Image (cartoon, rainbow, N blue to C red; front, side):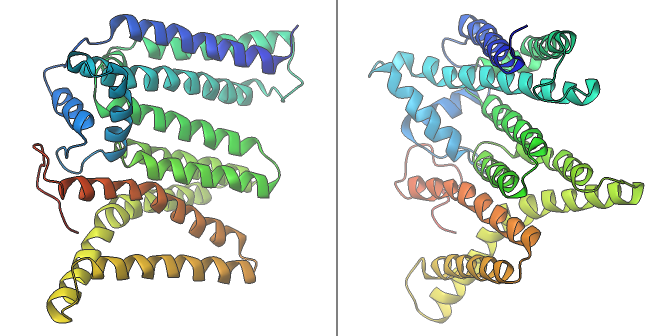
Length: 328
């Protein structure tokens, strides 16, 4: 039988095409009667949606709106098409994730699959991915201009990347996957916070790969640490850093008489300096795990920086400017 890598890729892209054609044929021509009208409008004119905003969704929707070629009656259709493409790609990565999980069940080693295992793996992936393609909630979000389709895409990519990382034996190459995961999580905050729910799964996969003799206590520690990371990103990085920047801003402007933005700039320099110091210190002390953790947080922040678009556009006072978030 043909090499499984080729079968896996061809079957994955076939599943992608089935879902893509399904969603293209059923896509909304205009706007659904809920948040979709707002999101389509803010994407078209780069405006500010309801808090916390969705800057990455807005920018990608803006790119898709160009495909209307100046016909404003087609803008909604093309913004909806961004959800179509994101959803079809979600199904593709879901297929590949199911195949990798199936390998564990069948104990099928890469390059050593029997003919029966090849059929079972490709079949299970196709059935699982196509079953999800036609589920009610996912199909609805796939054909309208809302954030959930794109958020599902980021969630699927992150989970797929976790499984890819688990397969890599060389630690230096494997750590690159961890940084990619962190960057995708940072970017996903610019769409929706759903991507954070993959962290507990990541914690467990990390634990079972690194520790060959797992215990219940170890599992609980891994879960506890991954839940701590969820809370740290959700409660400290996302709302916390702007809050701290706001306090710096008030102090620098009202107390020191410095210009607007100086407090936020000072905190930014402080965070960058802390990251650089942490990376240099951990590299010198050969603390690989802590170095990777600090670098991962840096990549989360790089992805999260897309929120600057919200401040920039709010200062232009667009017609839709909810909460008017012009400063930190």
